[in-house]
Length: 323
Image (tube, rainbow, N blue to C red; front, side, top):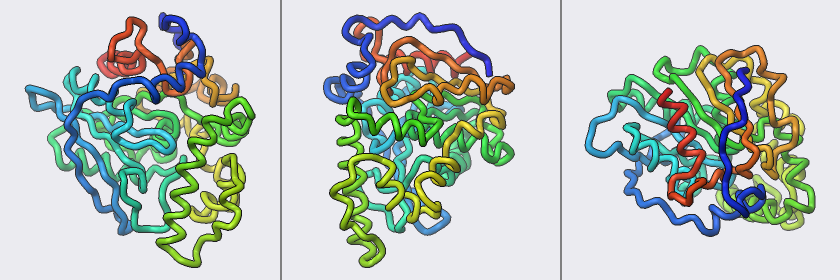
């Protein structure tokens, strides 16, 4: 891995605080004004995923980027929309993926989404390449979507379409077990409440869809990922337990096999990421990987330095994809 110098990203006060960077965009960033075209794809296993197309203005682009959101996000959240808005201005078509169950309608099957899902990303990517006249493709992922992206690129590198030239990921919990442990700390309780509220509702929806398949009696008392993943994520998706799920789905183990030029951006003040999620040693022998650790940025924050609507993460992705 090429360890890049610390970037000259110097946000103004109070955005030098990782928690402020993490919380502010969700509460106060204005929603980028875009007019996406929604498309529903049938998946090979009989389910569906919804994607949003954002087209480059005033031209027919020959390059496309697939953008993957984070845990309990969706394609209409501010951060994928901001990335799509910036990259379309740079001449890319952008496709924002919704994980199963995240587009406003429950998916059909008992399975929904988790940190290691890569088949849906492959399905969307191949569909977009088959449908459009694209010679170049790129992947962008945030947090969980970044973990999925890295895992996809490294688990079966021969399967990745040749058009995929670059990838950029931000705030990736590439060591899932240690990240789950850090998020369970009292200081991060506000984030856990947000995530668990959405995940619990998804389980209740699945229990109604599949009566008798899911026991929800202990659901209300769960306040962190580990017991939830033990009781629901793991058995629903074919893992032995939470530890098995974390072990098999952490993208860290796949980094050495990645063959696509990939930028990994992890803010040093990210409240979600422990030291093990800054993968300097694991990928040091892979010349296709570039690790950048700005001092600030929080978790999927990276607010613009000059108060502009374009966030630093969007500018950074655009520069890397254009290099």
